[in-house]
Amino acid sequence: MPDWLALYYREPVELTHGEGRHVWDAEGRRYLDFFGGVLTTMTAHALPEVTKAVAGQAERILHTSTLYLDRHMVELAERIAALSGIPDARVFFTTSGTEANDAALLLATSHRRSNQILAMRNSYHGRSFSAIGVTGNASWSPTSLSPLQTLYVHGGVRSRGPYAHLSDGEFIVACVADLEDVLGQTHGGVAALIAEPVQGVGGFTAPPDGLYAAFREVLDRHGILWISDEVQTGWGRTGDHFWGWQAHAASGPPDLLTFAKGIGNGMSIGGVVARADVMNCLDANSISTFGGSPVTMAAGLANLTYLLEHDLQGNARRVGGLLIERLRAIAAGLPVVREVRGRGLMIGVELVGPDGAPSPDAASLALEHAREQGLLVGKGGREGNVLRLAPPMTLTVAEAEEGASMLEAALRRVQDATGGEARP
Ligand code: PMP
Image (cartoon, rainbow, N blue to C red; front, top):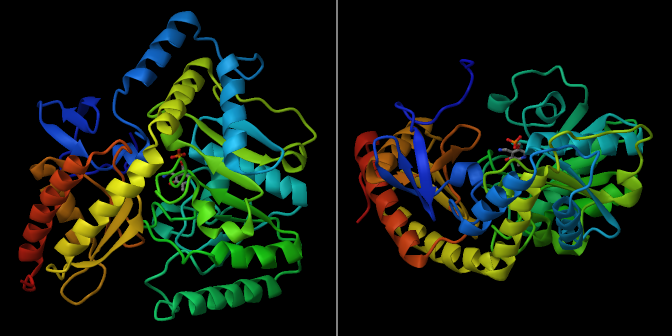
C-alpha cells in the first residue's frame, strides 16, 4: 500500500466485527465507536435489517451495471429525489463521495460551459483529480494541476480567520462581500459553487445559519449553480435538519446535491441529485458499472427505511444535544480544549497547546488515549487538531455519557502531558 495512505494510531487498529455502536479488534478488545468509519455507519453496525437485505439480494443476484434495471435502484432513487427538496429531481448513483462530486462537477461545468468553480477555503470533496481541484485544504490536496479553475471564498470556518471576531450577521456580510470581490476578478461565467454545509475533514466547522441563503442571492444574479456536498451532513445527522443545506433554508434547495457514506451503512453508495435540466444536459451516453448495484441498493433502501421509521434524526438531535452539553462542561475545565462545536451527532472538539495555537500533537495523543479507554474518535481540521465525533445515529443516552467519560479521561491525560493547569 502507498506511503501516503493515512492510517490512525501508532499501532493501527484491525477491526474484526461490530454490533450496534461497538466494534471489536483482532485482540478481542471492544470499542465504543464514535466515528463510524468516517460516518459510514449511519444507523448501527451489523444492523439486522441491512444485513438481511444484503444477504438476501446477494443470494439472488450479484450481476451489476446500470444497463439493467433493479427495483431497489428505482425505489431508492425515487425516495432520495423526494427527500432532496430539489424540484423535478433526477438521481445518478455512484460508488463513492468522490465520484458523486466528480459527476456533479461534470454536470455543472457542462451545463454552464465553464470550468470555473467557486469552493470554500478549508473544504474537502474527495480524491479524484477534479475533487482535489476544489479541495481547499493543502494536506488533502497533493497536486495543483487541476482541470478546474477554482476560486476559494471565506465562510466555512466560523471561529478562525479574519472574520472570526465578527457577529454572525457581520460575518455573513463580510463573506458575501468576499464572494462579490472574488467574482469581480473573473470574466464571468463561473459554473458553480460547491460547499459542505458543515465541513467534515475540515474539522466539523460551519458558517452561521443563513450564509448560503445570502450567497444564493449573489449566485442567482450570476446564474451560478449551487452544489451542496451532503456526503457527511445528509440523512439527519445534524439533528435539526435532514440535509445540511436546510440550515440556510431561505435559499431554497441547492441545484445539485451529492451524497455517499452513511446511506449504505458500510456498503459503497454515492450519488448526485440534480434538477432535470442540469442532469440531462450531457449529450453523450454514460454508465456506472457498480453504481446502483442490486446488493448495495437493497442495503441503502433497508437502511433509509430504518432511519426514517425510527426517527434517527430526532435521536441525533436529542442525544447529540446532550453530548455537546456534557462535552462543553468537561471542556470548561480543560484549557487544552479551545472549542466544542457542532450540531446533532456531528461534534468537533478543537485542541490547542498552552500558547493557544492549534495542536495536532494534542489531537494525536487524545486519539491514542481514547483508544486505550475503549473509544474510537476521528481527527480533522486544517492543522489536524480537531477530534471528530460522529457515532452511529442510534446512539443511546447511556452510550453518549459513557463515551463522554472516556473522552474526558483521555483529555485529562493530554492536559497533563501538554502542560498548563486544568481549571477546577
Ligand atoms: N465529500 C465530503 C464532504 C467528504 O467528507 C468525503 C469523504 N471524507 C468525500 C466527499 C469523498 O467521499 P469518498 O471518500 O467516499 O470518496
